[in-house]
Image (cartoon, rainbow, N blue to C red):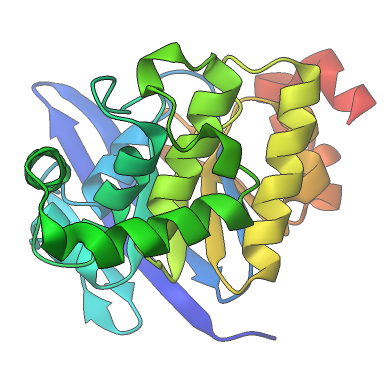
Length: 258
C-alpha cells in the first residue's frame, strides 16, 4: 500500500453558532484519487478552505508529507506542493489562456494568485521561461490551440480544463479539485474524468469534492462521506455504494446507476 501523503486529524470550524466541520479526520495516500462527498452544507468546501489556508481552523491538524499546514498562509501551502481548483471559475478574463497558465508557474514561489496575475500583466523579458513552460503545460493538456484566446471567450468546459492546467503548472504533489464537473455536460464530464485519471497516472495525487456520483464512483479509489460536517462513512466505491446510510442520505436512486 502506498504511503500516506496527507493526514488530517480533528479538524473543526464554527461560524457563529453553526459548527460547519466537526472533528473530521482522514488520510490520502500517494497515488490515490480520493473523493469527499455529501450534500450542500456538509462542510466539503469548508474543509478545502481550511486545508489551503483560506480559512483559519478552530482546532485540528493537517500534515502534508509530515509538514503541518494549519496556520500557514495560502502561498506557503501552494509552495509546499498543493494545488487547487475552485467551484466557480477563477480565470482572469482580461488575460489569455496562456497568461492564465503562466500564473500557475508563479504560484510555485511566494506569490498569491492575484499578485502573480498582476506580474504577468506587466511581464517583460524575465517572463520568457514561464511562457515556454506554460505552453508546454497547455500542449500536454491538449489545449495548445487555445493559448492565444481570451479567457473571457471560453465556454465553461474549456474554462474548467484551463483551470486544471493552471493548477498543474505549479507542479503540485497533491491537487485538490472542488467540483470539477460543475456545469459540464455529459461529454465534458467524461473528458474531465479521463483528465483526472491521467493526472493521477502522471504521479499527482488527487483529492476531489464532487456532486456527480457517476464520476465519483467511476474514478475514486476511496470516498469519504460527510454528514453535517461529520464523517458518516469512508471506504472504496464498492462499500460506499452499498452502505445503506449513504444510500438513504445522499445517493438515493442515483446510486443504482453508478
